[in-house]
Length: 376
View 1 (tube, rainbow, N blue to C red):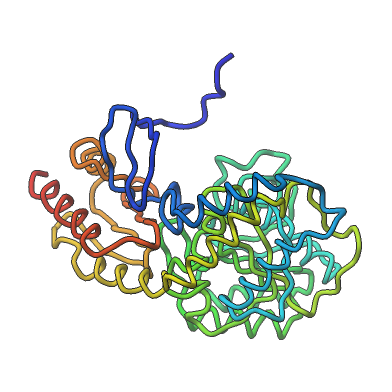
View 2 (cartoon, rainbow, N blue to C red):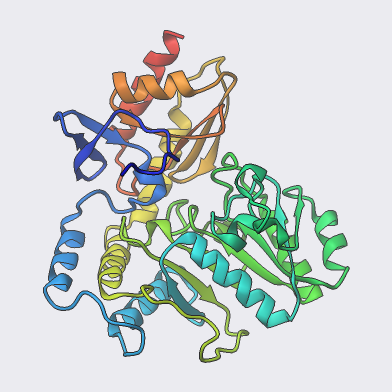
């Protein structure tokens, strides 16, 4: 039996990781500036993380959500303290797409309405509801397109108000920073206008912080730079450093109801042990401060080149926008300089390094990129 062929694979087989570095099966060391797509938040194989998972598997690995799990309560407390959303409730799931699915469902339950407003170039996941609010027709099947979704230009408050005024919108979903769409950062003023419009028209504001959250931008959530409070916040990637997990923070305005939401694997003991370790490491090692400082250093020190149009991002969520296709540059970084990076589309290199990244490690990338650009 073969694997279903859906991914373009690089000819690298990682077998070991430590901090911001991984090693392949031939013993070659790589600097990881992609973190497995923003998932590795506290570095590969952090000793506290490894110890927490080993300790938990020796105790109990799984039971259903029909029993009390104090680890879930511990995680909820930690997330509340780190994020400043201690008055919100936490629903636990297994992925970012699943978190967004449940947020969309909650918005519809809460308002009794069935239409969603999303934004151009958005990405919210590949499951049915999540892909329906993703602006990429290539991955939306006819079944997914049955959902009632309106896509608007990012930053267009007048267009948002025109849709909300129709009275049938359950929710507006927006990424803290658009990742797959090209590191597009909504203006703080737009976030504030969006919050005001949703409040005025009784519409649920959903912030997708799956990629941009969990300390990546220097604040716990990217939307916090604008000083707003959404009704629902979805999160996943960086929560457990590679262990599958997702979650939704739910405003106190939402009434809980037994059976409204549910999950088999969400909030399991191993996921909780991993997520608690990550939250404690982020807190104790002040990794949000590190992300902000090292991200600024990177932004300030990217080489000057006529091939680079713009560098944009916040903290350790960064995009380098090129005037040329980046596939050869990315390949040179990987195979010649042994540095993992990501992309957004054909013209942007996307950096999503672990929050533990140091200035010397960032400097290694800057030097390597400069040498590659000099030879273009």
